[in-house]
Length: 310
Image (cartoon, rainbow, N blue to C red; front, side):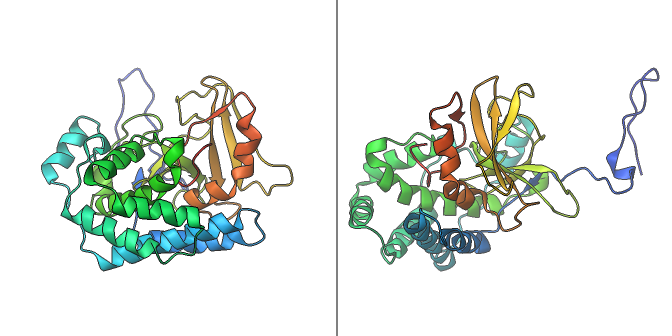
């Protein structure tokens, strides 16, 4: 076992791996798209039970099932070139550059299949009309919607249309992410996904045997989980003025982490309280916590294309 020591005047740097029962958390975990969306669909259906948002949660379950079906029926995209991955690593940048994303045959095929699968979902007429507008949209119009989603900036007058576009992008980026080597990812900034550069939808306090109690931010776009210090704002990185709020009568599984430095908040999901939590699904189902924050001093920092307008 090798250990690194500082200057002779400084004490040795502790190596957590040599302390019994303590290990350094793995930095990042990549998604498995073959099960990610099926599990999320099941979580949405579970959360819909006795929930005032049941119709919408059930619709989103169907949309996740459409994502799963589209992935199973279409060829995988070409992996990111190794040289691009190494350049990104050397420059502390994400290997999937969402700001310069261009469509290709793999994405176009997946997109069309996802839209076709989405027609099978039971949905309100307004949603079905929005879906048809996406299916009939020109390449230019689709490109604009794709850029809006990837920039986390969606116009309120077209929220429904962008939801379907976001679903296709999630499926595609999860496939791209799954082909990477998690060990080659590096931190790229506070609250920034090391795989695609996007903001987190929230963070998880995990109950995994090798990293019990560790915190992982979750990317809504590509599904990557990355380790992040607890009691630290995911929006600005501050450790000062951090607070936690939850709904009265809650079981402690979902809390809003607030920051008095940047006046932002994001949700923290505690697998230690509910090991079935999904950061995307449970974010939507805990809308009441966002409504509670609506008139307060904190703005929502997280991005979830399924929970737009908050």
